[in-house]
Image 1 (cartoon, rainbow, N blue to C red):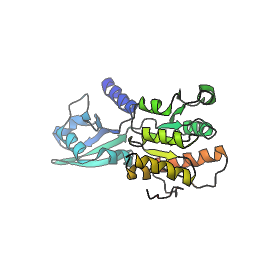
Image 2 (image 1 turned 180 degrees about the vertical axis):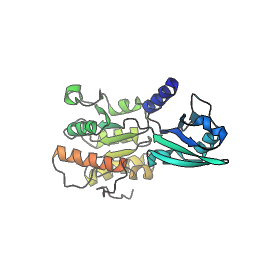
Image 3 (image 1 turned 90 degrees about the vertical axis):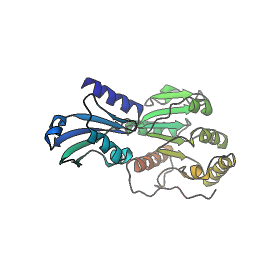
Image 4 (image 1 turned 30 degrees about the vertical axis):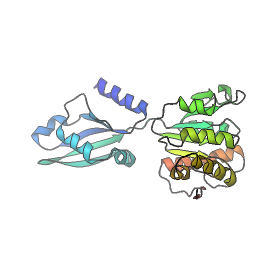
Length: 258
């Protein structure tokens, strides 16, 4: 049993989608032995430190993992040959990660709010006077390096949210090149409509797809009339939580034609 939960802990640390399936009840003499047993379902398959019945493998094949994770913890009945089983499905959910690119005035309250909301925060800026731990005490990691270097050296896991709040076009473009094709749960960029349009058009001209460019959330944040850095950070966090939890709030971003 210890080996099973070590394997679960590893899956959580990797940030990959998965569920723990527990057999609560089972009909049929041949299935009684699996009552109370746990099975780890990931994109690689089914793992357990017990014998794995054929029907658990079929369940994994028949049920898209992303759907099971999105539906949350639940009990489900599954038809077996000559009976049925009651399964408890418990999605694995590691800490979501937020990467904040730019260490200015908005980044400070955003890092604090993200940490309070359960995110593991990484802050990146190329200026030593902005990127240091004392300025971002709640961040798990503060990186002082060029954006391109920092992004090239990162491990890209599932459940990652990126917020671009740099000081200008040049750095926005540098950041977008490093993240726009990564498997992100959210990518948002601050800036005026004119600045954002110019940056995204440049990215498309360089060969990145217009579909990827149009997926960027900008103007960033929910439209709550935010003006101060703290208010803007609140609007950004609200949009990210809205997306993460499947909320219904209207976002400020507009459809762009690139």
